[in-house]
Image (cartoon, rainbow, N blue to C red; front, side, top):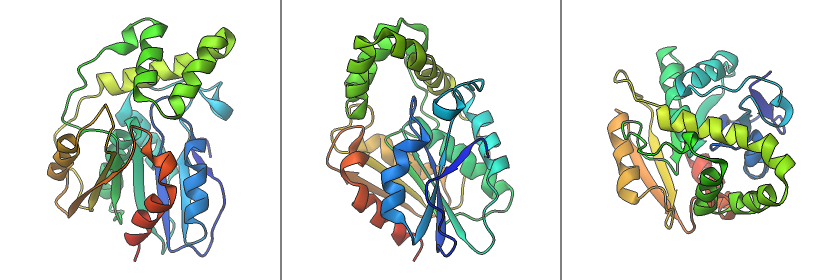
Length: 244
């Protein structure tokens, strides 16, 4: 499959978690979480085009179109419950995918949205039109693993030439996305953030409650935008509770 990566198949899993990476990210961002969930829950991670083993594939900057492609390739396994998880840009793509799954009568156990404000909030920046330095500065602002990546890109122009086009593409996807009113989701939404995330506040996360007719919950963990790296076991427990 072009879009989906499975790190470790679990035929007897009680559920499947489909994960969408952050902007500029790759499927491998979820490898550690996959290990923490195995074997009870099988994790499938989306690989956006234009990076890693899809470096030669044409990039896409339309979030709705990305969601459509993923849903077309992701038939929920018979007898196994499906939940969807997205971080940062991935949260918006996950929401659009969840809408499409439900429109096709695939019930979801939950939609987990992490580090990203609600779909109706328009991104005010246009960093995708700025110089590379502006992208690097914003990646540094968000911190976490991206701070190490920034330093590598600064020190290695050849690597920057390879990586920054996909980063710019994903910034374009986020900054040009516009929510289209219509059926949202009926599954539970769990909105998660790091308590010192500079990109999204607790108030921002609570706006997600308006996009489901089901239950809504919020969780905060210590850390910044990439808090997930330090809370893998807790995130695995939170995900697992939705499959009980």
